[in-house]
Every structure is written in structure tokens, then in C-alpha cells.
Length: 178
Image: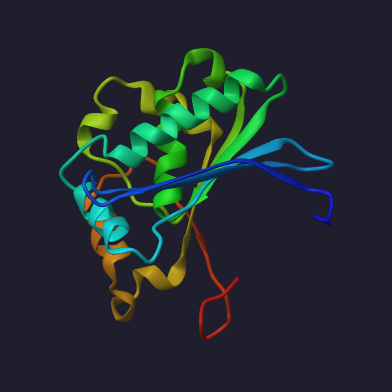
């Protein structure tokens, strides 16, 4: 199914000094739209630190890089495309889609936020967030709501704000794997 997919424009930045962890790649699917993907938090301490910084800073460096990346890719695409990510990558996908240039924003078909944290209240202040709501899908696993699954993602997600309803996914697996 994905054997002829091409991955291009891989960008990665990790910087201890600026507390930045960012990664994105553009996937060219053989029989579908281009998908601009943002990676979530990696295993580095700086990645975790930037996650915590999201609770009191906006934008964090990864969010700024996400906008720059989407503008650069989106300007060069003629056809509509999809933007998405998991965890912090979902947050980056939504933030970049919200803050990118209007010409790029108009080409976005759908935005997938897969279990990403929300945003500080100032992101909602100008009313632009609501305009993208028709293009956005937010997925979260049922297990994250269980008290036994408290982790850094849950702490950050609960600290930040959401203005959309999430689609809650359930898996019968004991590990909650879909």
C-alpha cells in the first residue's frame, strides 16, 4: 500500500540552548494527497522541556519552526494537502495551520491532531482558531482519561486549552493499541 510513497523535505532541529525539539517530513502518497507530518516529542530531555514550556510560552520554538516549514512546503505545492501529527506533533500541525500564510492555509484539506495537547488561551484570542475548526479532526485514546494513565502528556494536555470536541477512540486491547 505504501511501497511507492516518497518521504521528502525532512527537517529536524534539536537545540539544548533554545530548548527546541522539532521534526517534520512531507509524504508524497502514490494515490492520495500530500501529507505534511510533524513528529511529537522524542526521547530527549530538551523535547520534554519544550513540552513543559508550552504551558507558559506561546509560541515555543518548535511551533515557530512548524509555521516556517508549512509555509515553505505549502507554497511549492499546487494541489491541496493534509497536515497532521501525533502528540506534540498534533499541536504543531494545528498551530502551523493556524499561523501559516493565507495562500497556504487555503490549500489545507484536513488537519489531524492525534492526541496532541491544546493551547494557551492567547491562541484563541483573535478568532482565527474557529475558522479552521471545519478542517480539523482531533483523536484521543480512551485510556488517557483513566487515572491510572497519568503521565507528562496528560499533565500538559490538562494544563492547556481546547476548543474542539475530541473523537475518543477505544481499543479492546489491554494496551489500548488501535
